[in-house]
Image 1 (cartoon, rainbow, N blue to C red):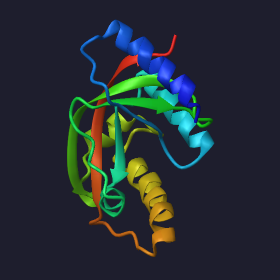
Image 2 (cartoon, rainbow, N blue to C red):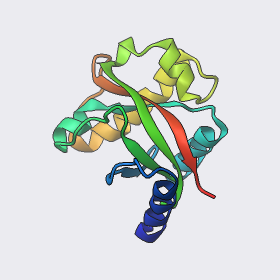
Image 3 (cartoon, rainbow, N blue to C red):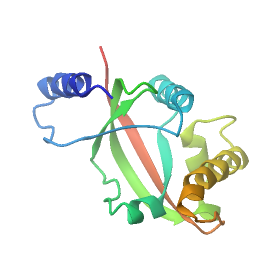
Length: 153
């Protein structure tokens, strides 16, 4: 990740939005360069307006959950900043209670709940395996909705 490039996009955003807070998070979607690139492209195209993450990881890493209004610099697979999104809604639900609407808003594959469950179960299993934890249908999922507020020039 290039901190200089991240700082630059943040300064560009703040020049246009003087009310922006001093803090932001910078991260990439997924667990591979290819996945990060594909998902940030879906966001840039307006197809992806939501994401989901494993609640257990927030607990284990003692991290705060995303908050409404939070600004996030989204990185591509090489760690380059591509755009800034603002969190608009956050809910925590068991895996088997994630809604069709949320799956659609994630914008991946055919946008169906069945597709969402298939790829997210596999993703969560990859995250849990090194921790010695097992996937189950009741693991808590952080469902986050967002909107693009800035695209890199």
